[in-house]
Amino acid sequence: SKVPTTKAPRDKKNPVALPTASGSGERVVYSVDDDRVWLVAANNRTERTFKVTPGTVDPGVGTYAVTSRSKAVTGSDGAQIEHVVRFTVVDGVAIGFSSAIDGSTCSPDSTKKLGGIRETRKNGTAMWNFATVGVKVVVIR
Image 1 (spheres, rainbow, N blue to C red):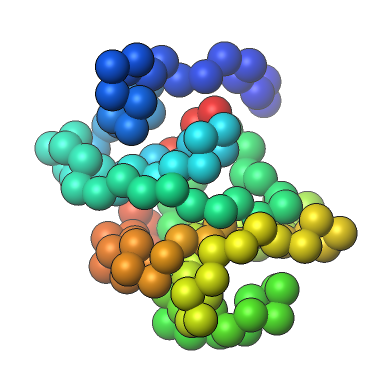
Image 2 (image 1 turned 90 degrees about the vertical axis):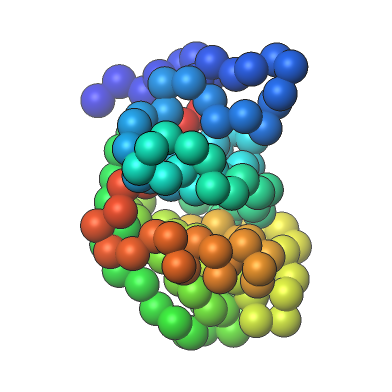
């Protein structure tokens, strides 16, 4: 499939507004260029938006669904993580949102293939409560 080379249109007056062309209905919208997530209700209203720290492996632009979740596990970087919400696999690397239990959101080790998209614990709890298995995840630039 052809990867879009242009960003989804943005509201220049409100850069954190939900981008147009990011799907419809209940969904998680993730911008790989802006490192930002929007939790969007069925009525297309943004319930929450927040910055994230991406892993070293990005998902491709497209529409996915939450495939699995884990309350608490050890991340591929060795960190204790919670509220893991996975939505795809890229070259054998699971891609998903999570929070480090120690609260850190530092950049990942660039020498490793890591698919964890880290969020604060507070945002991780919001994601966990919102993104149950089957919920749409729309990845945009």
